[in-house]
Image 1: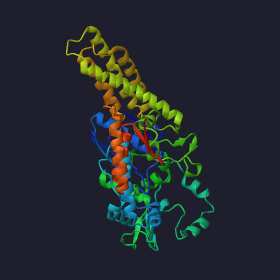
Image 2 (image 1 turned 120 degrees about the horizontal axis):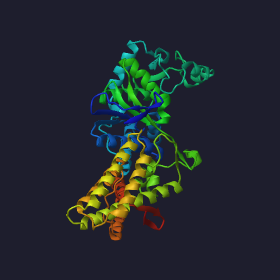
Image 3 (image 1 turned 135 degrees about the horizontal axis):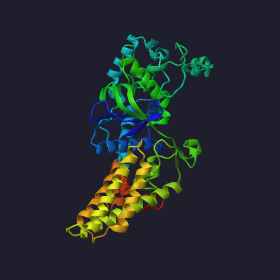
Length: 472
């Protein structure tokens, strides 16, 4: 398998550190609100990578964190007059619901930053001892120039960074960071402010810097060296660059073998922004489209390519997915009626040629996770199945075609098993139960019912006249 490594800017043969074992670390969300459609792309892409590696027989240790202490979380907590932990725990649960709705597998470990503070303090102490960090008035900074390879991932030259920020001294003074030795130095530990959560440390009460959290959690749950470190391309600088600097300075070894980054998501050709009114959460999108359609749409383009989200493109993806699901439904019906009998020579020839699709699908996935080409192969398989397979065929032939297409869709996280359509009366009963749950302020149950219906393509709309519903 070849992976495009952001570090080297080229495709490289993937060779894990330990035979048949792969450690993957994917930077997870900061949990202060519902996740947006942009957050969904890395979740879907790297979940698909994980699924393919599992298909190939690897033992995958997949770690994706929750940043549960951050300025945004604190700000939200202050606005609501509750503890920061209440905000983070609430939205961790909501993120998990959205991930399940997108058919994203649970991580092997979902570490929370607040549960790893002692190890973060230990890494800071190591960096200070080695001369890579220093403390000033309760704040600990990483001495960026002490790490000679700084900028190697983003290809930024440290001197260019300095020359491009001549006015930094004024900015540092405004932000209270004039105490830093160098404007490039970044925070490892920040002192407590009134009303903020904090932990005791050798430098006083405070909390860790964001970059440090991922370095510590990846080390604890994978090891000093990660096989694949992944995330959105917006994290390359400064987040991933700073992770490399502090991890390699502390551990004195390579931090990650391969770096994978997905491209940006735009909405109707524009950068997603609340000010532009094109900011959509997964919940927003789920009211309009089944989230399986969104997953399929995301994988219809190469993960490194920019992706434009628009109703026209999503509707096209919906139609394409329906072609696959319809074909699988027809195969399922054929399977129920087909008889166990000897294969004809024609059937043997068909299956022999059908195996070529397996090779082509794997070749696409092993060419830097080219899901777009893999989906094209699935469409060719569907076309052949529609033209050549019926209940008149031997059961073994129908089963082979059904299982192969189903397996390849499963690697993409696309659910193809055709469930019996939910009855109108059952929908109405669930809506009544949801209304009763909301009246009783049991919002968790109300959301669960909505998500259950959404997973079956039922879209709810709360109006003044009551709840209206439609099939997607």
